[in-house]
Image (cartoon, rainbow, N blue to C red; front, side, top):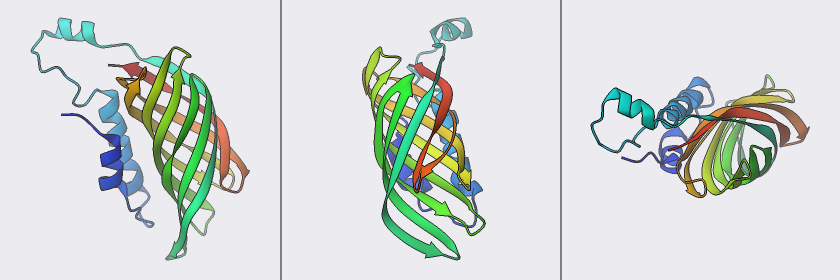
Length: 190
């Protein structure tokens, strides 16, 4: 069975529950854990644990910079929370050198805190060696101008076929609905 980020994002995470922030983070954290341990990527063979451990690829460290701009599609208000459905364009450098485009949702609260969830298609390279596409999803939390969160990626194509990984990021607002910062994580190819 294959794990598909797009189907999970469309069917299980939306819409946000503006009152329960944990309901937005836990499903994505579980999805990230499934990707990192290779959920559904087994060959179905029965091998000894010594043989299996010899087949497990080693993760590579990944770090770099990002800059993202959100473009509102629809803005609404529910119980004092502002909900912004948006499209985005993100540029990355470092281990990942490329761009990501997609859609997401940001929920802003009266106390100045916010959270966002988005998924998009990354087009670019990993360590200037493998070039292709991958699905990359982000959960972000913030207060004021600061932002931090987690990302996961998988479903690679081209030179990124078999890529799985995830990590953390932090940054700050550079303009209204624009952020930049740094990311770090681990990536492996299966």
